[in-house]
Structure formats: C-alpha cells, structure tokens
Image 1: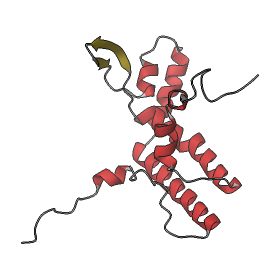
Image 2: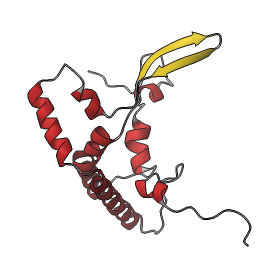
Image 3: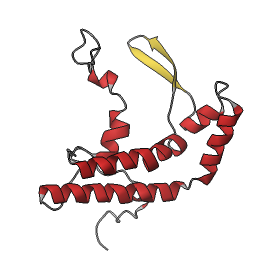
Length: 163
C-alpha cells in the first residue's frame, strides 16, 4: 500500500487534500515546529481531551449546499451554520442510544471552561517549546494574530487625537 499526500497527476493538490489543516492545526498551534516527546504528549492530550470536544460541540461550520455558475462568477449557497453535534442530532443515521449519549456529554460540558483549559495547555506547550529552544518571547503565530475568545473580548484602545 502506498500513501501519498496528493492525488495522482496533481502535484499542487495539498490544499485540497489537507483542507482542514488551517482550522484544525495551524490556527490552534501556529507555525512552530514541535518535535520533542513532551510537546507530543501535550498536543495529543489537547486533541484527545479538550480540543475535539470544543470543535465538535461548540464550533459551528457552514456547509455548502449548491454552486451555480452565472457568467464568469460562481454563486454559492450555504446552509445555516451548525455544530457537528447539531448535525448528528438532526441525522437519522445514528441510533437513539447514541443520541442520548451525545446529549449527556453535551450537557456536561462548559464551553468557557473548555476554552480556558485549551489556552492553559497551549501556554504549557509554548513554554515547553521555549525551554527546548532556550529563547524567550517566541511568537508561534508568525503569519497569524492569536484568535482566542479573550482576544475579541478585550477593550480596544480609543483611536484618535488626545483631547
């Protein structure tokens, strides 16, 4: 069996194959290289515990319904944004027992606490990276400003001339 990162005869196809790398990897971890066992343990813990719950139960995703070409432009129509949990609960393809189990998990979660746990583990990960490199003030988001819940909730400074 051969594993490749692209479709045959499409050498610049990685964006198609790895289309969730931006939202699932780079947006969370930045562009820093993590390669020690300690960093791997933190990343695996984050994926297994908090991040999958936060993404699947509280992060809505738009789903493309149709595309229509009008002249040289394409008009896209999307469904109303729903979380993956909401899509599963509306589906007929899973049993009632699984739906009840998912509902129990959903009711036991606190999105604010999940986000705080994610931020704490990311801080631990960045600290492990800084210790490995022996440097301070590493910016893991070389191409991206941090997008945390607290980032949008911060009071913006007044813009304009002082009075």
